[in-house]
Image (cartoon, rainbow, N blue to C red):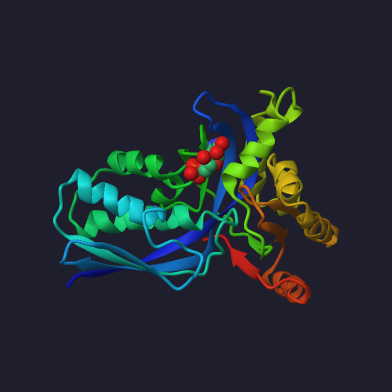
Length: 293
Ligand code: C5P
C-alpha cells in the first residue's frame, strides 16, 4: 500500500492591511506571509475500499467533511471519478483556530500529496484553482516560499525572495477566535473607518519588505501591523492584557497573526527568544519559539 509523509507548516502575517469589503462578502487585503517552523505532520495512505478517512490526535479537529483536508480529497475524488480513497492521518502541533492557518496549510499539503499519490498530474494553475476554492490562506502554501505578499482575498500570491530568517516568540491564548467572526466585527464598524480607506495600501508593505531585505530588523519590528487588531479585541476582549504585556517587553515589535488570537514578538536572537518564552510560560500554556522556515 502506498503511503506519503508530508510536512505542513504554519504562517505568520507580519503585515495585514484591509482594503475594503467585496460584493462576495470577503475583504480585499494586502498581507505579508512568513512561513514558520511550527509544523504538523500528515501521512496519506491509499484506502483500497474507496473511503476518505481523517484521523487526528487533536480532539477539536473535525474528521468529517468540515475538515479542509477532507474537502480537498472529496473534490479530487469526485472530479476525477476515482474509485480509490485515502486515509489522512494528521499529527497536530499547530494550534487550531489561532490565526496560524494550520487547517489551510494541511489542505495545501494534502492537495500536493494527493496529486502525487493519485498520480493526477495537476498543473500549478489547476492546483491553485482548487486551493482558492478551499480557503483564502491555502494558495500561499502551494508556493514553497518562506515569504510572499498576498492580495485580493489574500489568495493572490507574489513570492518574495528574502535571505533573512527571523526569530519570534509566539503566544496562543486558549480561546479560539474564528476568522469569519473577526471580519464580521470589522465590517460592522467599517463605514468610514480610516483603515478601510485606499490609502498607503502598497507603500507600507514595500517599506517592510525593504527593511527585511536590508537586514534592518529594528525597522521591520516597528512596521509590524495588523488592521484586524481592534476587531480581534472586540471579539475577544481579554487578550488585551497579553497584547499589552508583549508590547511592554523590550522586543523589536509585536503583532497579531491573521485573525488572531495568536500574537508574536520579533526578537533579535534565539537566546532572547528562549528567555522571553520561559518568562511567558509562567502565565501562558501555549508559548512557542519559532523561526522563518
Ligand atoms: O477563506 P476562509 O475560509 O479562510 O475565510 C473564512 C471567513 O473569513 C470568510 O467566510 C469571510 O467571512 C472571512 N474572510 C474575509 N476576507 C478575507 C478572508 C476571509 O472576509 N480576505
